[in-house]
Length: 122
Image (cartoon, rainbow, N blue to C red):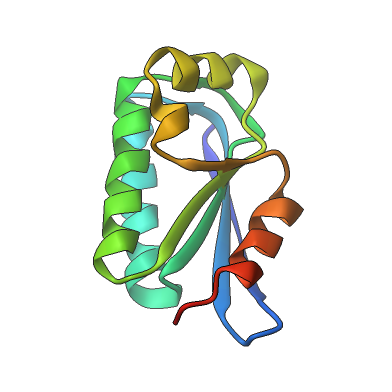
């Protein structure tokens, strides 16, 4: 089953950051749902997003495309888009496609959130 956990944090500077943690697979059958969720979060909740991929054990090109689209949406509104906790099996896909050089990828959710605090340029 596919599920997206959603949390909202406020940094010490008062900036709202949404953390999304999808579970299962991020592939052709789920990427569109995830894409819609990213759009909704960026437009309604916060332009600053952290995507925790620790529960995603499989990602395909449509999953990567949804992440790229989310990053572009955040860029358009001068937000930020970070990825963290990439599952080892999914990490290979990022490396092979060289997407690991495109995204800001952090080991842990905490590091991604702390980095968010460091880069305040609202």
